[in-house]
Image (cartoon, helix red, strand yellow):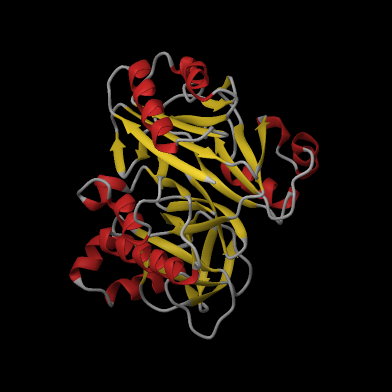
Length: 380
């Protein structure tokens, strides 16, 4: 198994594709079985992408989408023209492409549409956020294929339905999801949620839908205020715009960073004082408030990558990064942060990817649609 990654920032799409494809082909130095292509900063001629790629890769399976930024060859290009090409030679693997129509997001329908999905296989999935319910997609994939690994992201860069393009084989799609089942390849996943806990873990003692009404038997707003009052001035400033809620994924005596699924907080209801959260709850769920900043994101990613390095017997042959549009230089103040962090523990490993409208990745055995995360897929 061999992988190669290349990137181009040329403003003309056709030339940028040619350069990135030529560089990746030269680096791979083998027959490509898979070509993964992400394109940012181009609003015209996107429908040409599969045919241009096909001219370079022969019979390889083609997968990709339009993006708000791309990752390749250790470089992250954000908010401007860019082409990322990742090629893989996978002689021992089986690649099964699939397209999911927005109308087929039910477990039985997915099993019928996608036919057999092997135990232990990986579903590399790209979706259009305007035409497909992202949380519904990952929920349906988990229900239909519980033993498969799901990793991927939502297309980005467009502001209206119909303007994202998904690439699959020689076709383009403006709706639904496209993807690839990989059989015979080991794929390790890493989801860096980029938050640090504040205050103490609490029980959800009263809730309604997406609203937490009470924590530890007291009004939710009162408990949130109590945490705020314990913070430093710097953290109190972050509290106003970078506050999230962590939902514990397992029962433990003590909770630390990484034990929580991070979800957005939408605010406090005026009439009830309830906390509006992008999740639903059960009685006595354990939750904890979290803050997100550049330091927390960097520490979280470094810790996860270091643990992966310690636990892996062999380095990956290649990797993909699905990172949130809210990360990158806008968060860290400098480009290439997450790519650099990856290459510190996996030097020389080809890494491609894109900046997403939402990231698909597993946490504690269940797949979720995330925000503000970096999801890595490492192929061995």
